[in-house]
Image (cartoon, rainbow, N blue to C red):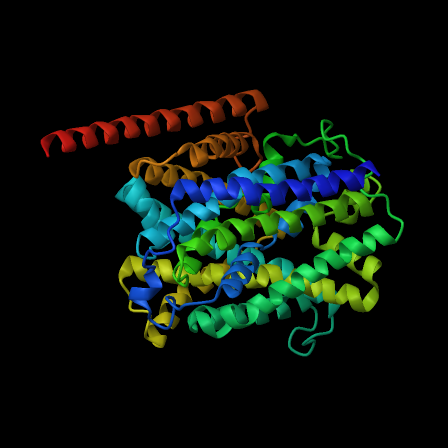
Amino acid sequence: MFGILYFFVCCALLAAGYALYGAFVEHVFGADGSRETPVMTKRDGVDFEPMPLWKLYMSQMINIAGLGPVLGTILGALYGPVALLWVVFGSIFAGAVHDYAAGMISLREEGISYPEIIGRNLGPGARIFMECFTILFMVMVGATFVLAPAALLASLFPHFLTDLFPSAPTLAWSVLIFAYYFTATIIPFDHIVSRFYPIVGILLIFMAFGLLLALFTQGYEILPNTDFFTNAHPGNLPVWPLLFITIACGAISGFHATQSPLRARCMTNEKLSRRVFYGAMITEGVLGLIWATLALSFYPDAAALAAAMGPKGSPTLVVQEISLTLLGPVGGVFAILGVVLLPVSTGDTAFRAARSMLADRFHIDQKNTCKRVLTALPLFAGGVALTLLDFPVIWRYFGWANQTMSCVSLWAFSVWLARHGRLHWITTLPALFMTTVCTAYICYAPIGLRLSMENSTLAGMVVSLACLALFLHFCRSERHAGISARAAG
């Protein structure tokens, strides 16, 4: 009984976060419904195209809700119910603020893309670095979000295209997904994303709640372990800082900063921002809660959950087993297809964002279809090359790169807020925390420096405090420059 209460309290906290803290963040930014938005002056029929609220919200939600709220939270569930706490508080105070800031700044700055936001606030050097980093990361996202859905589809339809790929059904699905990504990347935004993704989003939500209802009604004990102070990981991996990287998009995601400007380019009123940007991240938090609860309740303990992932630690096997068991062969297939649509719908927008950034950097006119194709080709070549890596390996690199992007984004948003005389601490505090997390992780993890936990944490704290000192120095400089300008005037 306490487990059910724990779950619903977490859901209630997310709802309260949207209603209270979301309204506070909106007030800090000063959202104004009378302001002219970029789509009113730059409509081009490709990227700047008006969309109604429900389509904006649903397309934002399904584009940002990739593998993080499903596979990330399943992997996070290995650490125990503490995963639910990070999903809740991370979504409210870090992830949703991050996404809202990215969208609002783009709205205020003529629909600029993510690298341009970084450049205008952290300098041209940071912009060039983040352009390269972000484009590479977008390609990594696209590749990551081919491997997982292809594996799930291959498990459902192992004999698909056996004539062409007799012993590699996963490869067959990967080819088809890449073909879809390429098509969706070069055609106008309105042709697929705004027409079909909102419908997909609605189906996805119904499927997630259907699985939760089946879990409640079929006699499973909901969250049998509610001791979130004890690390339950069967491999004794530390909660700090691994949990905060593992869950990735389920609580905060740097990738989202590349997506919010895409929706900002289609928005006709600033007052829609809280529902679209902040609200979509809260919805993703709810999806993360559902999948973490499914993983922690369907299996008796973390050891059983780890065993279900197989020798390679694949959470897709958990998705398959839970879905087919709770909803049967027909309903389970639909649930798995719903999970497949999450990364697929995110992967194509990742490549679209990379194409747009590359075009902005080299001033390539994207109204011409042939130029869009030529811009996209090298990106997809890189994506195909990355799929040669095993999924667990690419997920670790993806998780760290994703959260590192969120650190850079949050510092840039803090600079923008300080420069405009607004309360910057709403982004500065999560920037401090995530900088500590990402630095400690790369110092400790096998893919990084492999230092001791104590030294890694110390390094994270030193880097975070150094970033804070630089930022506060900037704030003082800006304040003195403003005083001098007013005195001269």
